Structure formats: structure tokens, C-alpha cells
Image 1: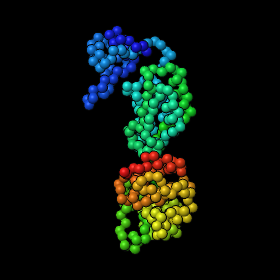
Image 2 (image 1 turned 90 degrees about the vertical axis):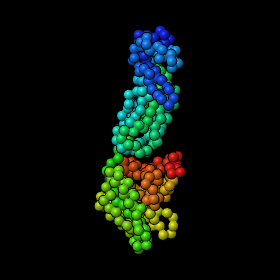
Image 3 (image 1 turned 180 degrees about the vertical axis):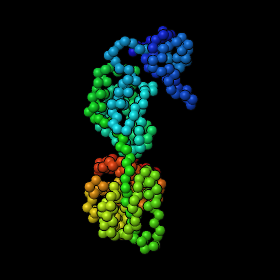
Length: 327
């Protein structure tokens, strides 16, 4: 591209979008790339402070910002993501289904370490809905050397996919409220209804819901029976704290699970237990999940299990940043 005075640009092909900003009224392209500049356009360009414009030339050693942005974002996306057309050289990635966003942090950092590249995304393991934008990126100058674009392609290839969305799948879920006081008729159990409503609202099947006493052997037996009956996920709510009467943690361990972490850096709901029996999540959920409709550890973590992503200890520890979700 070549930079020329506006007054000399009539008949030339605009090489990049020209942005107009009117605070509180409009922000967007006044003219799009490819527009052939006419004499009537000159006053409009001057009125927004444009005394020079970029026009298309025949030089082939540079890559236009729109083409670079399109290549940058299209090259990093994995499954269930679509790239928008460039707008003012910015390209967004849009989720094509409800799911959980996976971010290759090393790859994202590597791309942003290049001189002219800027990309940002939502957080790793965020729940995203179909049609939501999850990332945006562009290159800074109006054009970059083809050699630098080659480096972008190499890093996208090295870390592919930098961003991907795992779809929410349908799961059969066993839900066990735990508390001897419910069995003895001293209190009415209502907390599990909110969990059930949340899960069914996400298209899940709660095929078993049964109140259990604070008894580790009974918890073990019923949990294993649920797995034998075809549960994809087993959830125990309550009895998960450190009081003497609380037996949920002991019962889950007796099931022969692999405990990934008891206690997550998320508030409210830090006394959350994540474990697996084979590939089946067995979860101890604190009572806070039954007090709130959203914004607890349960609501943050549950989409991850519904997408059948296997949480690691590092995944859980990294939730500390952003884990204060109900301030």
C-alpha cells in the first residue's frame, strides 16, 4: 500500500477501512477497503481529520491488515468456532455451539509475543453459548511483511488449536443429597431441586435422585450402584465440610475414586471435591450450590464436566485467578 494525500486520492482504491468516531453516536467504517474514492468523499475524509489515506498498490511483498487478521484468527481456531469477516481489520471468533472454551495459553502467549500481533480471548474453561464471540485479534500496522505473516502461520501450526470449544453433551446424572437430618425428618431437603433445575436447563437427564444419610458406607454403595446403572456423572450435595458428622468425602474415597482435589480456589463453594472413577466424574458439591441460582463453584465447574473435559489439578489451581465469583 501507499500513503497519499486525500486531495490526490480521487479514483484510487482504498487499501484499508477508514474509521469514523462520533462519541456516543457512531464508531465504525466510514469507507470500507476496496472503495474507489470519489471527489465527493474528500470533504468527509477531511472532516474526520484524515489528510492522508492508504491506497492499494501492486507491491506484493506485504500482507494487508485484513488478510493478515483473517489468517491469524482462522489459523488458530479448532472445532466449533467460526471466524468473522474483518471489520476495521479486527476478526472475531464465534462459538458455533454451547460449550467450554479451551485455551492453549502457551500458544496464545507465543502469538502475542510477535511484534505486530494482538489477540485476546475469554478465560480457559469458560462456558460459552452458541453465537457468542470468544476471541478477537488483529495486526497493528496497515500491512505487515509476508515473512512476518509466515511466522504467524508457523506458530499457529505449532500450537494448533490455540482455541477450541468442546460441546456440551447430554449426560445421565445421579444426584444424591446427603444429610441424616433429612432422613430423620428434622429438616426438609430442598437444595437439590436447584441443582436439578440447573442441570435440566442445560439439557441433562437427572435419572436418579435419592437422599442419603451421613454414612460413608451407604454413600459408597449408592454411588457405585449409580455407576453400575449407567450414570455418566455422580453428584453428592452436602456433608462435604470438615465437621465431625460430615461423611461425604470419606464415602467418595471409599468408592475407589481418584481424588484430583478436595477444595477449589473458588468462592462461594470452596469445599468442592473433584474425583473420577475411571472416566466418570464423582463430585462432592457444597451446600452453597443449593442456596444460589448461579455464581458458585458448582455453576462455574459443572459445564466443564458436561463437556466431558477431564479436569487436572493444575486446571483447578489456575481457577484462583477469577475464582472470587460472587463478591
